[in-house]
Length: 169
Image (cartoon, rainbow, N blue to C red):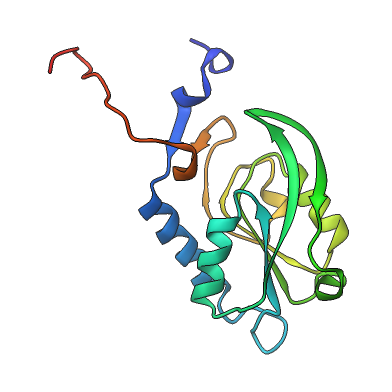
């Protein structure tokens, strides 16, 4: 079966709640002391929806109390569309992005981060996971995955029974 014929779950990377928590904490540790104001950051801005959980963990670990969101829609189910901002963060907080830590769960093609970077060019962009096409848009990330891997985040999944491989109980 060719890679193009695979369903997304057939080359999937399943991320548990524990794993996203560990990886987001690792991201926070990597960002600690790297802010432009004596090593500190003014605020964390989560790219919704995927960046909400990692941004909360990063803000907690780094004791950043100012947290905002930017909503960018670039997916419709599993199909990528043109990125567009549907909710902007507080304008007086953002400026050109200096001192702002923008956090997302994943950079895929880079289109979302490219749009946000064009609005806030001096912000620092951090993701937990990065795919090769989007990696140039990220300043800091934890784990690289192949471009054809679909990441299943815990907020997208539910536990269910799985039939044994040899169909025996």
